[in-house]
Structure formats: structure tokens, C-alpha cells
Length: 404
Ligand code: MLT
Image (cartoon, rainbow, N blue to C red; front, side):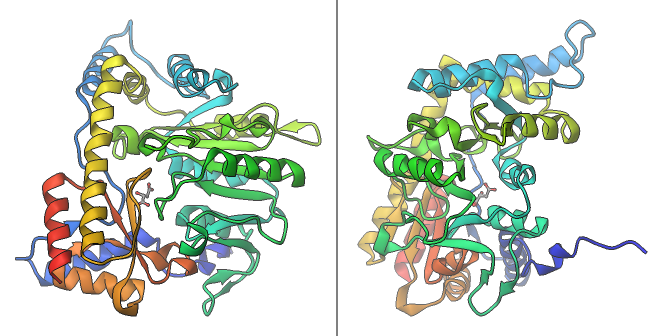
């Protein structure tokens, strides 16, 4: 008789954004006349930029001719894309990352869930609390997290690094040494950022204790302040301890087209074995590459026209962030984030729990957000709003919230 992977049974409830979608669907069915404004999941609303569309059309036409048709993509991704990424995201910032250390994928969500496979099951993970749920859930599925305590909402074998208003939503070194450290900056969900000095301290710490940092930089395009690292490889020593994950979803609107990449420097080794070789082996065995047309679209992100158009798109979303941040501040809410990230993290009013505020907002303002507690126990009493809506809806949502 077959047996299931019963680690899946340990997962409490369903995936956060599936639970929210279910609740919103129920509300919509019961209230078909209500206009819901969705500022929950961080999904973009603006269309793909013209430079990207042009590149997509061209690539589609190529696929229709025998001379320019493309079948399976190379394991690591097309050379044209990896070289473009290397030049723009690393060389231009003075970072020593080579094109063959870049692995093109279908997005940072998959990479952040899959990367744990190349590590021993005995490794102990450390995560920020609150945290993007994929990091923890993928480790639960693998059987690396021990048992779940519903009272504390914590896993016995996970090290939690609380990120609260008290520490400006920046994690502190844990008392117990972890093996794998997940960091995400600009941060989802709190919208916080760390300085270059703070990130350098994490790199030094990881190198000292022999840990790996899995650095999710999906929201890098939203950085607006100086002295803030755009990549972890700006830090000295990151080549021996850090894997970086990037996404085309947030900077270029690829949530529906899917594209991302992981950087695994060849200098990271365990007993002489490089992580690079393991990730290459995994990619070769389990993945046939992002589609040619999408990789060409990704290349257009770095064209002069693409860069200019996407700068405007990011500015559009960051203007929404400002509308939310300033509107709620004026209304007396305690608000964070929204400066280097497209997320606004607010304290729920009147001691409401995160889910109480979710229901309250849905029922009374018909606005959907994300309950902070869905990201971890330290998110309780907080709530996340995304700046990825369209401008008109964002303004209306803020007006509705202020009127409550
Ligand atoms: C979020 O809302 O946290 C993100 O959209 C989720 C994701 O990027 O997968």
C-alpha cells in the first residue's frame, strides 16, 4: 500500500493566499452588489510595458519559423538573458558574479521553495517572524521543521527571529546557531529594509558560523533610499555564504508570465562540494527551463526603453504606497514600510486581531488586505496592504478605510 508524504498533514490550514481568496469569494457571492477593492496578495495590475510586449511578439514570430524555432531551453537559461542579468544587476553594481552562476527559473516563489532540497534534512532554518510563508511551508513539506504547536503557532525545529516595531522590523542574530538563514529585503510583509552595514553584519555572521543566507531580493526595484544594498553581493564575503533569489514579477509585472533567477556562487562549498553543482544537477533533472519567449521578454526588461518604462511603473506603484501611507497616517493609524517596498504594514486599531481586522475591513469597507498573523505569530495585531492596485482603487480604498 502506498504511503503519502505525511509531512503535508502537519501543515496547518491552507496556503495563506488561498484562505484569503476563499473568504473573499464567499463574501462576493453573498454580496454581489458590493465593489471589492483587492489590496491583499501582492499581484501587479499594470500591463506589461511596451518594450516587453514588443519583444514577446518578436519571439512568438520566431517560434513560428523553422529557422528561428526554439525547443528545450539550456538548463541554466539562455546565455543572452544570463549575460544581460550579470551585466546589469551585478557588474554595474561592482559585484563579482558570473553569468554561469545565474540560474534562470520560473520565479522566486518556486526557487525559494525548492532551494531547501539541496541541503541536508538535519539543517536548522532561521526565519524572520513575520515571514513569506513559502520558506517555512516548503521546509515543513520536506520534514525539516519538527512539530507544530498551535498555541504558539511555532514549529519546534525552526528558529524564529521576531521583527517588530521595537527592532524596526530588522531581525537580530538568534541565540541558537542556524544552518540556513532566510532573509528578504526589501521585506515582505513588513516593507522594512536594512542598511548595507546591517546586511554586512549578517554576511559576517553567516561566514563565521558556517551558515548559508538565502536572500530573497524580489522587491529590489522598490528601493528608494541611499546606503541600502540592492544585492547581497555588495557585501564583502557574500560569495562564500549567500544565495540570492530574484523575480521579474514585481519590477516588470511578470506575475502571470513567470520568470526569475537564482544566483549560486561557485565559492560556496561543503566538504569540497559546491552548492552550484547541486543546484545545477537539480535544475538539469527537474526543470526544462523558462520558455524562450519569456526569457526574451526578460531580456527586454534591461533594454533602454524597458528600463525607462519600468521606472515609471515602479513609480506608479510607489505613488500608491505614498497614498496609503500618508492617508492612513493622517487617519491616526500606526503605519510602516511603503518607502523601499510596495507593502504597507499597519498596526490594527482597537486591539483587533489581524483576522478580526481582515473581516472588519472586508465587511465595512469592502477592502481586502492580508492579516499579519498569516505571516507568523509576531505578525499578530498587524495588517498588510499592497501598493500594487491601480491608483483610482487605491485612493478609494484609503478613503473608505479613513471613513470607518
Ligand atoms: C505576496 O502577496 O506576498 C506575494 O504576492 C506572494 C508571492 O509573490 O508569491
